[in-house]
Length: 544
Image (cartoon, rainbow, N blue to C red; front, side, top):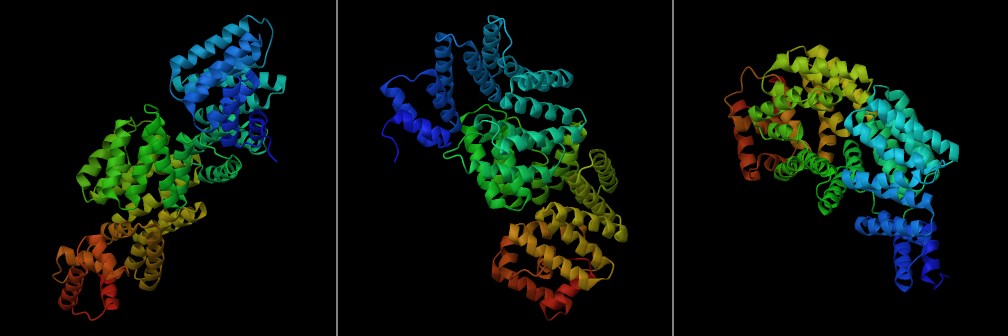
């Protein structure tokens, strides 16, 4: 039976990581009688884990003052570190530096070595990364690790090693950096690190994986972190960047509804604390999901919100314009984005979209150059994700150049890569392109099977419009269309994809009755008597 003493109940709940109960009872105990600094620190941590940032800040400040009054300088400095670290994470550098400077001054008065010296190096290392001084950042994190090891402080050691891992990735040593991040995450999952540190490290590790396009590692650690969060009752903290990263992982895995929920939660989190840099990333991710689901108005609104918060909405906005048939606008947007982007990793995020858009604008030479650049970056970074994207881009260019057999080989490599990475949307898109190549090579049976599989995958995701766009854009033009109007050609393409009149009506924003009339006209003009015959005609004339 739980104790009726709120202080005892709060302490017990804190040990169990039941943050709601801990916060409720420790706060009640504080109302009855001001808590001593040890329990006040527990209440600060519980508040932070519940996402109550303002309360947590006030409690850390109180705790700092109480430790000072008790002449416990080291503990007071540790509180100053947490204040500075949390403020830096929220993009409040001036206040952050004020708390860190206070901690340094207090340590100078001790005239002895303490583990807190290492803690105060962590924000300095993060700041050095932000300013681009990677050598200094690496040196600071290594100093912190030495101090953490000397004092046997696992939290500091984890912070320092993970920081060095991020620096190594940016210094062009991804393998060594990822090994350090893996080592830290093993310690995190084993419970060697306090909960207050876990979320920050996890979010940062995901960002590191993203920098080198390591989707497999990011997915594995996301699953582990999800299990960890399950043991934290009432956990709210780490919603910002962590939720954005989780939404990205879920999107790639095809769990679009779950990804949308996480992106919406991320946007709501940043809306409560405006001005944080992650707000733009959250809005952009929300826009991506709406675009993929064909919710174009919502996508545009989210992209505009991202832009207002400082996140360039590309290539998403350009791909939205492409989906809307505004090829000129899409081309201008993606070209401007490429012109403004120098870093190869950042360009790699733009190039697949650039290839698609350039081909839609019939700028085949530009598309080939973009595809070649993407292939070079993929080779340099040794990234399976970029290798699959590069193979797909090359296959699309080869289709446009009527190099059908090389295109088939490139697309087969892409499909294999996407399947290995379990990215169903790209598997479906590549399947549509494969069906086009196979049909052009005369293998109608295999083309039909490939297209049916691709359509099923894309329909499950809610991305049927993308299949239609690819077939229209990359299939060979017919020598004759039998006098069909453009709308009839669109209807014939959709009929050949195997979808119902209801789906065709929804895709083209017309009534089912109008669809039936178009199909009747198509049959009459082409001398056909069934959907099967229409499908065969579409294959023979490059309309599917």
